[in-house]
Image (cartoon, rainbow, N blue to C red):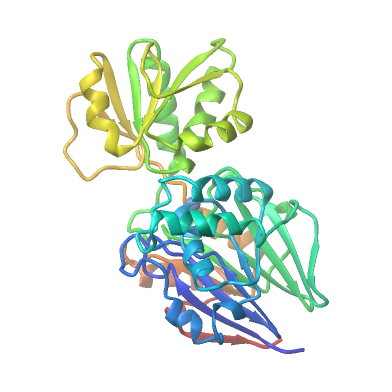
Length: 385
Ligand SMILES: [Zn+2]
């Protein structure tokens, strides 16, 4: 059997731009191709990727874990560079990608909108939608499986079986994951955005506070959630559903400047007690708005409270509160995952902002046999059984 070559193209030491190159014998796979919000050029590091290829047309597969820009935003760039392989993703993510790429919210500043539209029209011919839980043969010695995870609508984990070697890539996952349907990986590549955060986070505390707050304030005033990602909207919807399903017949939810184009998908995936309104604010209710629309919303409303769920770096006004919780897997949850999956090697796609790498390494080595492998961008790692 030919060995496995792995390299991280993006997402390391950064919040965004997740992208990992893996070569299994003759076949090459890119795991996500995220947009990098901080750097220019935003994506990618096509130059680094091209160190492994004759050109992007040489790449066999690109897997997209979920429809967040930091995981798929480099797609147009790949298409523009004449990607000629297959895009592997879930049916829902595929639908979302088609929506996103036809909207102005698709913000690849490297390419003109018309160019994006043109590329979007071709994307259908590249997509290979994979049903969940069912093993699919990519090649005679490569089997893959997509497992659903509760990060955002359509999000999945990818399991690759290459000649009996299991490689698992998590993209983003959050808590509540049941690992029962996962195989034990030899190599686990995992989202580790919050891995080194100085204090570990207990998400359940803030979610509990948010629930209490919603109970106290619903019907009294407008509750405004500024959100930047679909993931957060979906998560808050779930909390709302859990809280209000029995209490109320219907809830008015106003989407203001947020993802109008995926409105139908939200409707099909989320509770039917919610009345969705695009824009307009008539009754008391829950408002999701983009950060850009926040000041406009505040001007229009008399009686409201703004709830920040992603944390803010500013002084809060009288009618603003902050209840940050995280959609990324926290350190405790990562440790729980390692305990359950017991991989041989674990490769974190980590963030360097929180700077507590040494302490985490020590905690890790005290608890696990499993080797924690910090790779740098472009560094080559080879695995032989
Ligand atoms: Zn995400």
